[in-house]
Image (cartoon, rainbow, N blue to C red; front, top):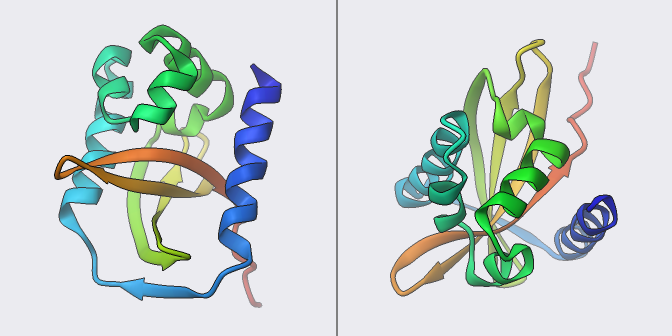
Length: 138
């Protein structure tokens, strides 16, 4: 499972760093999809959380239980966030990436990029990448 998470993270990081970025206006439907999945995680409702994943991710993980185990192990800050804030929505090489800032129970901030995909008029999460936190200037 760890190799799969590492591979997904590497693949996503490579797609987002080599291309020009365009910041877009917020898209409430994208934010709603992400928040709805996080709300499902907070209830340990992995079946509902799984419905917000793209078909490719659903195929990759096979079952809501496998998906839930991956999130619990690889993205605990998403499974049990203290708070969620939406940052920029960016277009990168034809894809849409929503930055999400999550605070965990210890107060640590985690920056994530959600790769979004529209399928049959609905937004689905096609991948999540943990970003390096921005450096703070003194």
